[in-house]
Image (cartoon, rainbow over all chains, first blue to last red):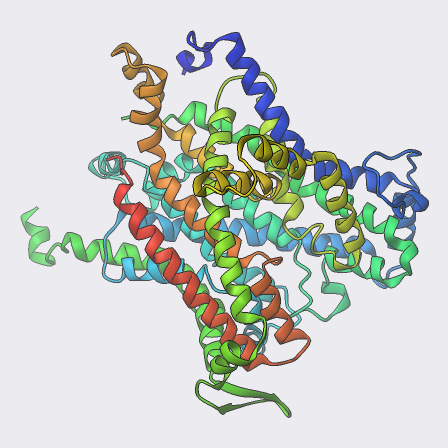
Length: 286
Length: 303
């Protein structure tokens, strides 16, 4: 590891410079929407509707956020309830998803059993299906289960997202079989191999799955299956706030997008530094 | 030992593998069947029926009529699908090359690496329904596009370069491909967030001792890249190609997806919309099947 941290002797100062130039150029593309969103949320109303639109705010103001908080206080159920619902769905859904998907991915990548290949093929195929069309049939399933107006209708399907299984399996294939054989020789049972050897090794992959799942669940409006007001989610409530008013709420809308973006962003920054640390310490070696 | 054998025969390796396999996959299989396979087959049934919502749902079996309608009568379905396929052929290779390149750069040591990595993941957070999803906020998105066009001004740059290099009217296949790809740099960059993360985590799992060994043997950086980095990450190229194709086809701003949604929401034609979705699904499945069959032959699995 030390060797990598050292400056590569064959990369010149010009090379360093080139790396920075490339990153700055593309980084600008990537950061542009965020800059725009931040600026939009700080713009007074007349600047939001300025044409042609400007990227940078001229007279920054926190009015949009102040308006947003006032409107939050006026909702039917206390606003903290919406926040709790979304946090609950996100946390439970994500943890369950990582657990169930990685368990399945582990055996699919490291064991051969009848039907394993066929099952994985079906999962990958199902990834390609347009999810929008499934709304009505899915509603029928939920009615049969009696899960309409129940958070289970959001959480449980999130457990079995095919994309998570697919990514996890591909990551697990890179783990050398030798490690598992060694553990078996030492007398470890499957559950122990899974929890103590496989899971620590795929920590970066689990964090990737977590990011996926958090983004999806955090933005879940749940308007298809949840009708009780006290079970509705944060994005739904925020959208009601924006669309409830006239065009004058555009400023509040900009503040809302900031408000809802913050959590996934913070999680990513946390996960990102964590990924680097685990990789440095685990180091899959032969 | 002998006593135990008398009690019960030791189970075969294959049997034990199967038991473990089914036990570990069971929760996923149940969820997958209930919330994906069952609804999928229900929608398949809708595709072959005239769906009427009156006192519950009634399905009248009408055979292939919905499919015939989609291809022969609907003015948008077929042309839109062809257009998206061509677009995909450009986008996906560009996304793969771009994200691979960025991942390698991000895997280098330099100051502020954590921050830069976070920046490159921003579009995934921003585009995944946060800004787009708040539909009432569309004026904001429209404004964003204008600003991007104004600040980046890429179109004009490529146009100028094109005029410098090529005489008027001359089109050379591969060169045009590059220009078209550059024209869409912004779209490509925005669509590469997840792919960069996947490549990056793959790069980090390559054992440093390999590079160490290569260096001691006197390999140059170029050789190290092609003989170690590239083969070690080739399985993730397959993953990323599949991911990019799926992501491209299922994006909400994809014309076909939009058409399917419109048919369902505004026209309330569930049968037709399901038929379109299944046709589209079949096309995407065939493409991915062919592409992954070609790539997986080249993939190197490290044992």
